[in-house]
Length: 387
Image 1 (cartoon, rainbow, N blue to C red):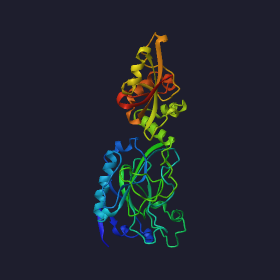
Image 2 (cartoon, one colour):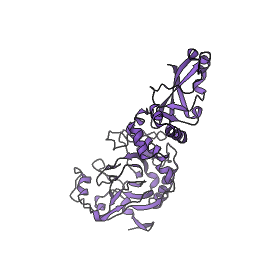
Image 3 (cartoon, rainbow, N blue to C red):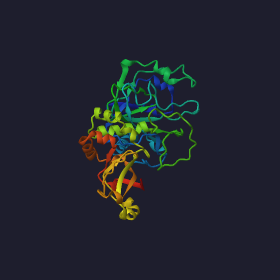
Image 4 (tube, rainbow, N blue to C red):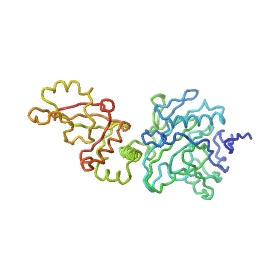
């Protein structure tokens, strides 16, 4: 039996052959292949979660529809390892899962209980070479159950996760390290761990498989359109981009940029975060009131979408503060407008926002203030209309 020495541990090539339940009877640990360098970028909470998104077709090129230094680094290290152990890697699909979310104390981000990835049940009468994956996270490390398991009495009508979890020996558990990439196969039982404190977690999995991951809720890759007959499935907890998930990302960005947890709690209690109206995964609506002299109205209405009309914006369409009053003292000759725009969370000016927060907190939360340092560049003005 040929074995390849990798990072002082051994990989058994039998694990890449056709799926065979008897392989569960072998004690095994995940193989650590690398520690990522782009730790800060990896943990920065501005990424879009994707589930089993195909990034490579057999004999095709890898295409990731977004830019990320840490994801690129992970894929590069994964490919370096994969080419060493799998001469047929180009014939595989590659799937990417990226899951960023706020995890409350006592909860786990991923599937709870002992399980494995890559089951081949009744659908696969002729078993395929096993799926295998590379995982990395920055917090709440995954636990691997490294003892042997006996699936002899199991049929494809059984719940394999439930049955095998009864055989877990806690004394043999192995905890992986944050920011390290680990290799695992379909025979590695592992569990997501409940966190002991509120935590924001980033998790990435790169999976190699000969199977089409054609479940309805898998993320589509706009760079790799596929004509598959997608089937419905339940969405794993947290991977659907609900408003709560978006707000959790936003809170984590506040923490990342210097806000304290008690300040975030104060903002939440005072309804600041509830004012965010998301347009898509990263953009939200912003509002600004402005007054214009009557004789400037025509020019303003024809050019406002190209103007830098100010840095002070609100998250609420009900805010009636008049910022940037251009007709002070001329109440009878001014016209009030409300402008509506969109702002990407990555273009928030955190220094200016902090200044507003520290200057007068009651005004900050009452006006639902948000700041950007360049309106013309960072805010796409959708419309301005007379109040």
